[in-house]
Amino acid sequence: MKSGISRYLISLLFLTLLWWLAAFIVRQVVPGPKSMVLSGPIKAFSMLFYHWNAIWPNFLRSALRLVISLLISVFLGATTGLIIGFEKPADRLLSPMIYIAYPIPKIVFLPVILILFGLGDLSRIVFIVLVITFQVALSSRDAAKNISNRHVKAVESAGGSRLQVYRHVVIPAALPAILTSVRISIGLGIAALYLAEESYTNQGLAYYINNSWKIFAYSDVFAGILAFAILGLGLYLIVDLIERIFCKWNYIA
Figure 1 (cartoon, one colour):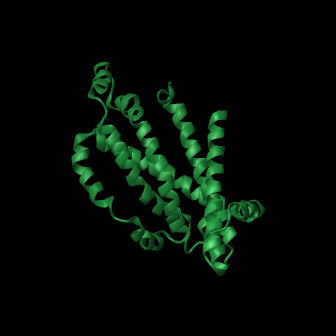
Figure 2 (cartoon, helix red, strand yellow; figure 1 turned 180 degrees about the vertical axis):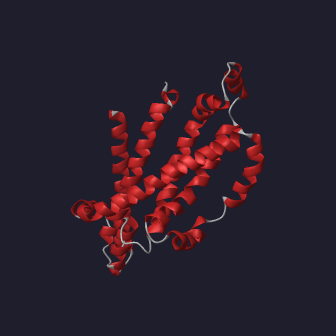
Figure 3 (tube, helix red, strand yellow; figure 1 turned 30 degrees about the horizontal axis):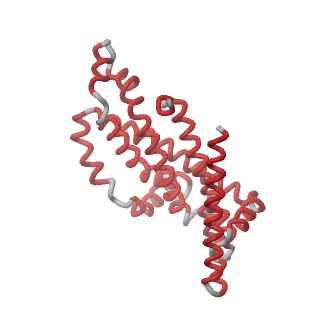
């Protein structure tokens, strides 16, 4: 536990040093007011602390949108992916559809989603779900396709039903890959969240960042970026905890 905390602290210190160095170089090279665009880490952390009362409601709204979107996406994507990967008829029927739809940039559907679902939280959640679900579905599908038939036959020969095969073989075998896709999806989800909150909303971290840009409050911009980083880190740690609980075999030395 202590070694894990130490690694995070060392990483934070190293990234902060790189950030300070980049800000220092920009101030030396870029002339005039433009040199202040890249705020230093000390100023950004200070703004995060002093303006937390203003940031907190936006942080909470963004976190709520992202967490709900992740839960829906994992349920839909994992369920669909496992069925497609494990059931050959479903694979033949649905995989081509996924291959066609997955490369389409989902941002093109954002105006349509806003019109159909309104300008509230629902439209942001629908957009993020659309972005994330394909990632989880593909990872789940590939994991299910690679399950050894020996394990399936062992459960079936013991009288296990199809549902028991999924419960005792398919889901446990695919869970590490699903959790890996969730980690990737957190980054994709935060990017999609930023795009969804850029306009037609009055709350969220992206809203806070864009408002800060408009008044040239660059330190507040980076305070908002730090808040996004805290949100992502918190979700990553939760996924790691879930993996330690449900995939204990991955941590056996």
